[in-house]
Length: 498
Image (tube, rainbow, N blue to C red; front, side, top):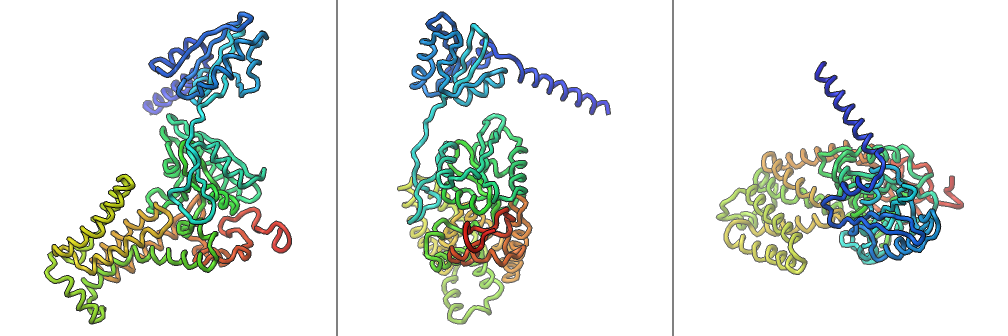
């Protein structure tokens, strides 16, 4: 009890000290202490034409130095008014009352101005506008459709979304994450469409993030995930503004972070991870075929090699006689069991894939050719792997890349290894058991408290028109039922309006 009281008193004293510092008045001496050992910080003292003295405090690497003289220094020097700050009234000028406010503005690219005559401090936003140009998306490439992608500037990203959704109902709420990074976060949603309960869940989750460094979107999603230990992401990451605009129109939430080109979209389902922006560019029959092919490729990627191990180890009597002859011939004189043979080849494939990602672009193509042809052929000739397995590993590796979401591609690899282990012990029964566990896991996941396996569990037949088959857009008149949106109809006039 005594220790608890002592700890409470210490916490109370710490909070009082923090509040005292937060509300401490701004002085030039305090700012000199704050900027000590910061070589890029500058303190400049000047006088106006009427003799009034003022000081400027700023971090030169964070401001636009080319505009500093034109936008601030010259107007102040030429000012003849006693309240000389009015000379720059056309810019964003804010009154500062505490040292914490001063530090925050200065670290976000503002110039601090001290009116020595009236002992007042002001902040003028003059942040450096350095940013890369808008480029094509490298993670979600499509043949037709918009080519622009997000940049690291959050204002520019919001602009690209608002340009596509020019409605006042598109709301953008600001947050700050990371006690050290102080990353700017904006949550976007369409009022009157998005479910207020989902918006409140997202707002609460962002506000409760308590960590010192939030550098990019996946850092934030790690604190907002409903199921931290799952292999599957509960937030969609995208750098395409058109995907964000479409998701907002469906009633979802979009979260943007400064200094990262990837936005978060939620809530999502397992099936959204297999959808591509190009699905809504192709004719609906072709889009449906390609989407079905992705699901089939995911199934092949996680079961093909385990099925090979199960058949050759436990159920060889199920293999047709002619194929069995081929397998026996290819496995003659191999030193490893089917399990170890498959495990070694899959690990080698993963090493090659990771190496090709880390190497420069031109070199990575060479790595792929060397790994796919030379190493595979050498493994067969050296007697470390069968010809049949080399073919199956190649098919499995290619099939895993058909999933549009990169995070799911990596999850597919882990699932493949887990099911492979089950297949080596229990055969086809182990594969079936692994798939049942996978379905049970997916059924138990949620994204912002919404079911991750919808519209299958819970069952919403109406949403199946954009599930395995992408129905013609004129048929998709209602928003997804699992989102429980305020406005369900997507038809503004005529039939189907509310």
